[in-house]
Image (cartoon, rainbow, N blue to C red; front, side):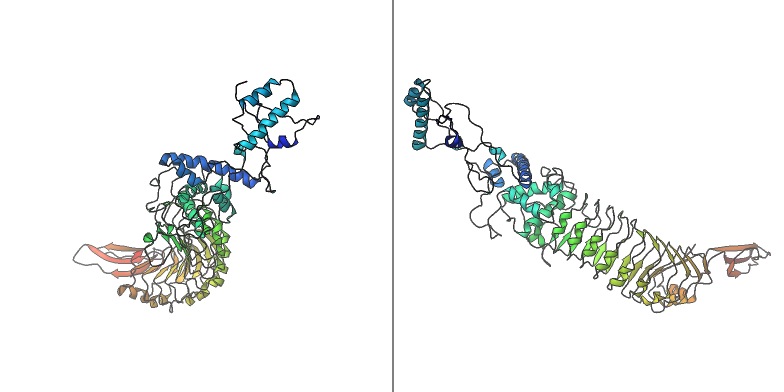
Amino acid sequence: PGEETTTTITAEEMKNNKSDSGISAVSIGGPEPKPPVPPSASAAQDRRRDLHNKLTESITSSRDSKGLSEEDAAKVMGTRRSSYSVETGNTGTRRSSYSYNVEHVNEKQTGFCASMGNLVAVFFICGSFGLVLDLLGRQARIQPHNSDALLPPPPQKASGPVVGSTTSSITDCDDIIATLDASEFVDSTALDEETSPQHAAMLWICEEHHANNKLEVEDPAFLTRYALAVLFYSTSGRPSLETSADQTDWINHDNWLTGAGYCSWFGITCVDEQDNMELDVNGEVLQIELSQNELSGSLPGELSAFSDAFGFHFDSNFIQGSIPTQFGLLTNLRDLWLSDNKLKGSIPNEIGNMLQLRELTLAANGLTGKIPKSLSQATHMHYIALEDNDLKGTIPAAIFRSLTALETFHVSNNELTGSIPEELYDMTTLSTVRLSENELSGVISEKLGQLINLESLHLTDNHFNGEIPDVFSEMDLLMECKLGQNEFSGAIPSTLGESLALVELAFEGNPKLTGDVPEEICALTEIGSLEALTADCYMEVLQSTKGGTLDLSSIEGAHVIKQQQGNNNNEEGDSVVIALDGVVCECCTECF
C-alpha cells in the first residue's frame, strides 16, 4: 500500500490466455512475459543483417577517428532513433506482442485491490479495471521485444532533389549490399571477407559516398564508382578504409577515393580531348591509364563493369596474380596493355570474346600454357605482343586465317615448338614478325616473299634449317632481318641487297652457310644504310718471317680473303688473311 505498482500484460495473453474457470490470468507486478519468436528470415536477409552490423561497427570506428557527430553518422547509416513496429512474414500484419509499462497507477485503486488478498475474482476485477483505466486515460509506451533479432527498418528517403540525380539519395547500407549482391560484376563472396578489397570498397562507398549524397544505387555510375574503389584497394597497397589515403604505393593517386566525380581521378578518361582533372562528374569511363604507376596486388574481376571502356593500360607495374576471366565481358575494349608485370597463369580463353580488341600486350610476365586459339575470334586485332613469357605449344594457325588486319605478331623468348604456320605467309598486312628464342623448327617457305609490308623479321635462336629462300626482291620495306643461331645452310641470298631499307642483317651462328657475302649486300654497307652486318666469318692473319713462305694446305676449310707479299725493308715476310669457317665477308661489321 502506498507504493506505485507496474502492471505488465501482453495483448496476446489478454485475448487468449483464459483459465478453465473463465477467469483471465493477469500478472500484476510480475516478470515480463517472453515475446513470441519472430519468423526466421531468409538466408539473404541473415547475411545482409550480419554485413549491416559489421558496417555499423566499422563506420562507427571510422567516425570516431574522424570526429563525426552522432547525427552525421546516423545520416550516413540511415539508422532510426525512434521506436517502430515491424511487419512479420508475408502477411503484412503487425507483430501483436508488446509490453505495456503502466507507470502511473492510482494509489488508492492499488491499495484497495491489494487488501482483497485471497479473493481471486476481486483481484482480477481490480487489476483489469486498473488496466482499462490506464488504456483509456493514458498512452502506453510501446517497445518491440528483442529488436536486435529483427531486420533493420526500411530506409528513410531524403526529401528534395539531389544534384546530378533524378531520384532521392541513398540512406541505408542494406541498399548497397543488395545492389552489389545482384550485380553480375561483383564478387559477392568477397564482400563477406573483412580483409578483401571488395569489403574495403563497400565500407568506403557506405561512408564517404553516402555522406556526399552522390548517387542513387540505380544509377550506372554507382557500380562504376564501386569498381574503381575495388581496383584501388586491390592494387594500391592500401589494405583498408582506416589506412590514410596518402599511404599508397601508387606514384600518382590524385582525387582517388575522394568526394570528387571519378572523371577527375588520375588516369580516368571520360571525355575525349578534355582535361579530365577539371571534370567533377561521374560519366562514362572510356579509358583507365595507370601505366608505370607502381600498382601491385592483383587485378579484380570487377573491372568487367566497364563494359563501354575502350582501353585498359596497366603496363610496367608490379601486378601479380592471373588475368581475370571476367575480362571476356569487355566486348567493347580495344586496348589491353598488361606487359611488364608479374602475371602468372594462362591466357584465359575468354579473351577471345573481346571482339573489338585491337591491341593485346601481355609481354614480359610469367604466363604459361598455350596461345589460345580463341584469339582468332577478335577479328579486328592488329597487334599481339606475347614475348618474354613461358608459353608452350605451337603457334595457332587459326590466328592467321581470321585476323586479316594483323600487323604485329611478337612471341619471342617463349618455349614454342613446331613450324611456322603456312597461313602466316598469306598475311600481307604483317609488318613485324618476331619468333626469336623459341624451339621452332622446319624450313622457311618461299612464300615469305609475299610479305611485302614486312619491316622486321626476327627468327634468331631457333632450329630452322634448309636454305634461306632468295625471295627478298619485293620486300622494299624490310629494315631488320635477324636469322642468326639456327641451322641454315647454303649461300646467303643476293636479293637481300635489293632491300634498300635494310639497317640490320644477322647471319651469325649458322656454321653451315657457305660462300661469300654477296656484293649487293656489301654495297649497302658502303652507302651507309646497312649499319650492322654480322656473320660467321672468323678471320685470322697469318704471316711468315722474312724470306719465308706460307703453306695453307694444312689448314682445313681456310678461305683466303687477302694476301700480301712481305716488305724487303723490314723483317716481315708474306701475310695472308683467311677465314677458317663460315662465309667470307670483307664488309661485315662483326664476325663470329
